[in-house]
Each structure stands twice: as C-alpha cells, then as structure tokens.
Length: 329
Image (cartoon, rainbow, N blue to C red; front, side):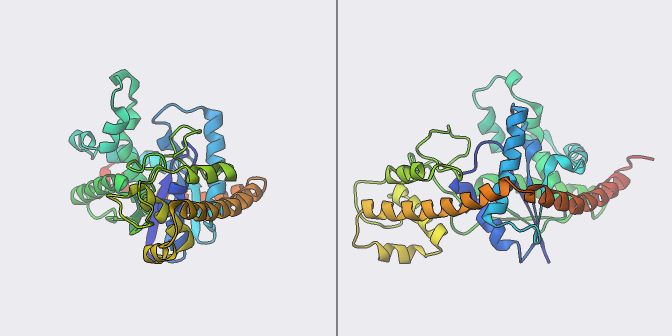
C-alpha cells in the first residue's frame, strides 16, 4: 500500500474550503493509502502564537479531523511537535538546502511582504526544510496539496534527490497530488481570492466549520455573483456563481453539468438558497459529531496510537540519515 502524508497548521479556524480542498480528500483516500495526517504546530509558531490558544486550536483541529471522518484505524493522526525526529531531520535538510531555493519560495515572499527584517522570524524563512522533513521522514509516495503548496513539494523533491546523490539512496521521491475539483474554494465576498482561515472572524466571505449555521446561511445568501441570473460554471466571467457551484458539487457529489441542468430554469436567489441548505446540513452534521468528540477521550486515544506508530518509523529514518552523514559516534 502506498503512503500518503499531509498536515494542516492549527492557526486560524478551518473553513469549508479547508474541508473541500484537503480533509475531504484525506477521508476518501485513507482506505487506499497508508495515511499519516498531522497537526503542523511547529509550523504555526513561525509567527507569534498565544500558547494557551494554540493548544486549544490543536485539540479542536484533531476533533474536526475525526468528525470529518478520518478513522484512526486507517489514518495515523499525530501532533508534529510530539515527534522530535521532525526537528532532527529538518536541521540536516536545512544544511542541504540552498539560500537561493528558499529565496524563491513565494509563500515566504507573501508572508514577509511589507515587514521589516526584524519582524520576520528565521523559522518563516527556513520552514520549507521542516516541511520537507515532514514528508521525507515517512517515505511518502504522495502529498495531497493545493496549487499554492506545490512549490514546497517540488523543493522537497529537489532536496531528496540532492541528498540521495550525495549520500546514497535514502529518501523516496514524493509526488504532489492536486485534486481535480474543489482544489480551491474562493472567498464569497471576493471570488478572485482564495477563502482563507486567517481572515478576520467576522469576515462575510469565509465560512468556518464551526460557524453558527444561520450565520453561514446568511454568508451564502449575500455571496457576490454577477449581473446575470444564469446558473452556469464559468470561472473567468462568473467567478462568484462558479464558486457556489463548486461548493454545491463537492458537498453533494453532483457533477457541474448535473447542477447546471438542475437549476437551469431558476434564478440566483433560488440557487443560493439551495447551496445554503446543503452547507447548513453539512455543518450541522459535522458540528454534532465534533461536540461529541471534543467531550470524550477519543482525541487522546487517537493521538496516542498515532504517535506510537510514526515515532518508530521516523526514528529509523533519522538514525539512517545520521549514520550516512557521519553524525554521532
């Protein structure tokens, strides 16, 4: 069975875009791949975090993973910082990564834009090496990723190839897996921008998985569309309505063609109401499961089982790397 590795930072509150673009695919693939899904808490501290709030977000994210359908029988769930080998391997990979490569990382450019050098942490600059360690520790075959993260997987591949050429065959070269549909859910207020979990909590363009259901309904009903009233998928000329069609399609598993035909004789108001109903039903079911999980022992049981498995795999890989690079006795 091939191996899948991915993770999400516990910064901000997860959105319906995170579910459709990532978690939904993890759930669908977990029976076909040996899956390792982690909470990337070490990545989250590249910018300042409140320790108490961070720990709450970590617990909440695990509960959301479980509520969405990730099954500890098929998926090893763990917290990145509880496995010390991620940091161990990250340092070695940093020493095999070039400054020029890090300078080209677009996410660093975006996050550091308009900031003084004194306000930018070294971790924000070097975290692609930690991301590479997250992947290479487990000999991942595939890494589910959005287009905005594809560059990081490509860097991981380059680092792995360079290391293998220098020290001998050590790391498997991973492949990025970009979903064919629903890879990017856009902001409801500005459908030219990706829906982001870092948006302000009261932002009308973002639906969070733990949003009040009627608040979510209002956000859908006020979503920006266009001057026509034709429910047709056209990302260039009709980005707003196309975004709503994508959300409806991903939550109902109906094709875009089926949706266009279904609502061909309706107007935007009727279609928005239908999308809102689907979203509210989804959130209601998810939140009911979430509340049961957050008040149980399931989280600790899942994390204990997960870290036990991944720690052993990671330990062997790091020992191999240490040996090949001449570290230790």
